[in-house]
Length: 123
Image 1: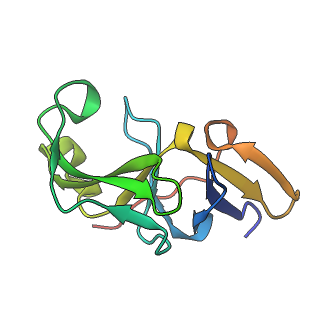
Image 2: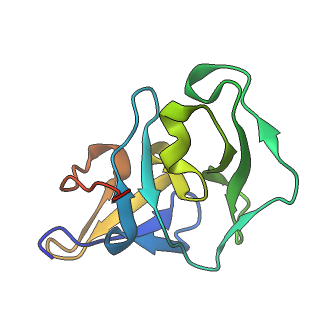
């Protein structure tokens, strides 16, 4: 594909995943990349967190972090209202926590500055 990228931890450059695993559009109020598969260097705690404000208010989720440096990378929803139900069980990377290496252009750029082609989940 034209816009292939590898996702890296912003702090330690550990490989976290790639754009071939993107599977959904970013919901309003959340600046995330949604993936259905990540590398083994993405870990999550056994305990659930509860969203107290913002777009995740009332949701329960597992906090994702980098195995190498411990940086909080995003979340994986466990329960939510119907608006975010399609994200349950997927891996949502905070765009401000990751960098993207663009294969075609051989350069690294902040995830918040990359526009990937539209991807939608099939029901």
